[in-house]
Length: 296
Image 1 (cartoon, rainbow, N blue to C red):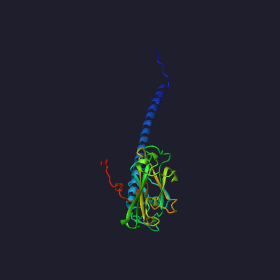
Image 2: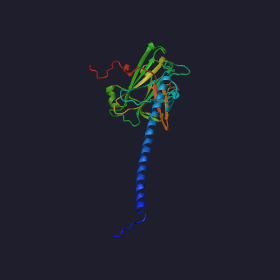
Image 3: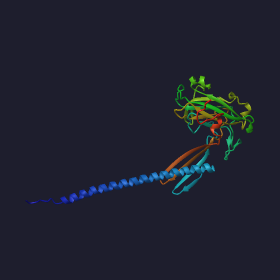
Image 4: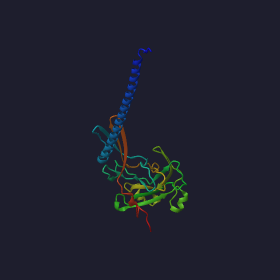
């Protein structure tokens, strides 16, 4: 038997084998490069976020913005007054049942001392509109949010010894009002406050709460108010405050807003933090407080 060999057959097999091996090697290398790149970006993102947090912490301590390098990352932070000189604003935190938000009527300096002057004007109006509830919230369900409005004022403006409290409570759910004795809100909600709409509102006259006229329309009479939400155990809701219809006076600063940007490599992370002015814990708003149930 005579064996016949095709010229070049062995070379073709060798080239095919080399192509397969080369493809596998290139695939493995590309995966390795991709994994390294992803890991590097994740590490940079973590460093950038940590740098942004450092910028926030530094700004809250010193009260001003700054820029600094931290190892192979850096941050830039800025501090500004929140809602100062505005006729309305949306409270930056959403509230669930039992939680409260604060609106300040008196100004603060950089050391958190209260004052009223040309640089830190105080609110002197005789009313305020409170808005709450997400747009479309039903007024006839058990989780319809109701509010309690608690206003702290001084009968002799500037004298803490004459501090007093006035309260009002408002519930959109007519079926509950006979049991909880809350008042009804106004017929309509609020529209376009910082681009947000609200289902319910109440224009609260301070005179209707029994506050004497000498405690408003003057500086240092009105201190602050707290709005506590009730019944909305299923979802958080925002609140907003509007004084645009109260004689043209504006609201003072409601706290500090810190914006911080952290950079590491190609990663950039931004944080925004709100710090309200110091106030007593909410447990002091109640005559009796218990972390558990109370049995009479």
